[in-house]
Length: 276
Image 1: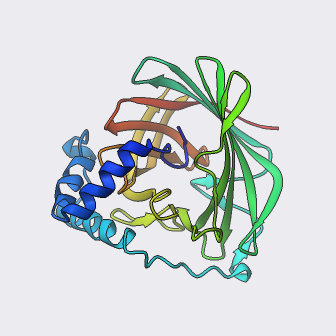
Image 2: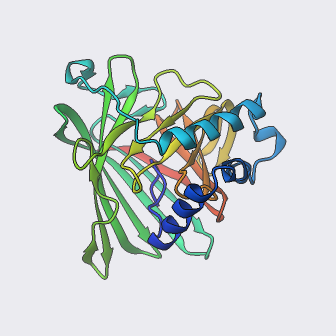
Image 3: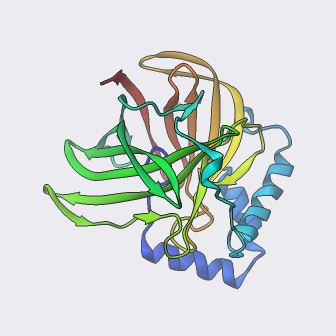
């Protein structure tokens, strides 16, 4: 599972979803209703009907092949200091939780001092490792950069699946500018309720979306109580029945809680943060 974006899905389910979308566009409305499963009325943003319609538009647009963001390397800065996502080298966040199957998940996110050039942009390399019941199952290097307006972009990842200490696959790896992949926005400069945006784009493979649901949520976790949290819904039109809610705090400069609200259950929360 990724904290910054949804976990990659199974090939069989992808095929079913794509066939369903191709066969009946009217099913978009049903998918939008499914996306809101698990939300109480208090969790639904104002103008819910408008947001549902926006999701439908995104579904059509996201599969149209017309997404072509303009990336000008001169428009990017060398630091990532967004209040909700401050990726300063040396910072580390540790998360733990339980999956739907009762497995213990642990995720460590470390901002490395390394950089990588993608589409001419110098990106910050963030390492994300995941353990399940004490066994390392994934080791990923993500690439992020911030533009002059304050938007944080996601340029791809080098992901390795691990079993018994051995690399068994690289599913989920992609790089903007390669094989039709395009970068997306992982955090908008000035998020507003109702905003919806692509976090990544490689047609049929990486189409994660984000939508801002709230700006003033209160979240209580083991580390304490956090006010005025940013609440974002993560989902993908390739797997519309699976939805996650992510909560970001300016006090932490990153994610503090991730909850699976549709398709499966479980959550992970921040248990430690440090600077190395």
